Amino acid sequence: MSTPQDQAEKVIEVMDLRKTYGETVAVDGVTFDIRAEEVFALVGPNGAGKTTTVEMLECLRTPTAGSATVLGQNVTTDARSIKADIGVVPQSFHTFDRLSVRENVALIRRLYDDGLAVETVLEELDLTEWAETPFQSLSGGLQRRTGMAMALVSDPAVLFLDEPTTGLDPDARRTTWEQIRGLADRGTTVVLTTHYMEEVERLADRAALLLDGTIEAIDTVPNLIERYGGAIKVVVKSTGEPAEDEVIETILEDAASEVYRTDTGDLVGHFEDRDHAQETYSRLQEAGEGRAIDLISAGMEDVFLQLAGATPDAGGEIE
Ligand SMILES: Nc1ncnc2c1ncn2[C@@H]1O[C@H](COP(=O)(O)OP(=O)(O)OP(=O)(O)O)[C@@H](O)[C@H]1O
Image 1: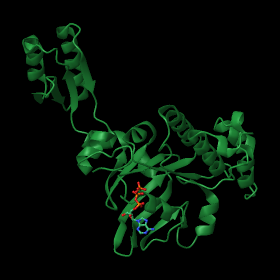
Image 2: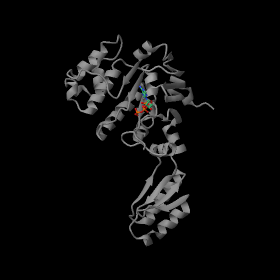
Image 3: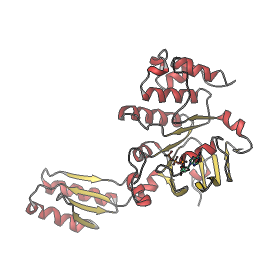
């Protein structure tokens, strides 16, 4: 049965795309599509093939085999016109470091016949206050934001962001998420690569998990979590007095599909059903009289753990 989402306009269509560098298979035959106005995340640890995949879509690398279209145009034969229609913010990008934010954005604007007014883009990304500041004097977060402004001033239908918040502090990361979400809400299709699972949960409509050049799973974020995230957990923190846990333990034993005690003495119950977990959590709170009890939902970290056997650290490594 086709759903409304299936019928949404496909902005990018990828068929059995492959890229090898000598003996190294970087992308091993991936097939997926990206729909209009969604935020689509390619996730995976270092070396999974995320950058190579998007660089083929950005027409920066030639596929070894397979095919891909961006806005109906072929990445191998229509590179010039695709490049004119997309915006790209790589992890590191070229600017004139001594020129101001406004001057850098204006320089890019001049390369295009059509596009947005420089001031509009600066406002959209909350950069007006920094417009006169030389690029080299900006914080990492503002430099990244200037890169986004430079990519957006041509008014692209699709924006590619390579690890948009790597190296940013939590505040700058949250601001970036809000701005990216805002762009998608106003009609830009956003394709991003990341190894931050929280970023995927906060930002992405759909995600594809890449491992060793192949797609292990692809779906909406809630569907991925429901399918691969595993149990919802209710955790009753230890008081150091196991005798105090009798009533609590009985409630958990009766309700949960599995109950165990951690090394630190916390009691953990697993639930498949959210409502059942919530109801048990409420009963435990009543019975526990002020005991610390947590209801922990599954998330993308759990999805990654399930599919890759480990979660990536801040640097994207999973060893
Ligand atoms: N120019 C290149 N020449 C040779 N091998 C390459 C080249 N670029 C990437 N690779 C290899 O291809 C594989 C996929 O790399 P890619 O950069 O696409 O992964 P990634 O998921 O984007 O990783 P990261 O998060 O580190 O950017 C890796 O084994 C990498 O070493």
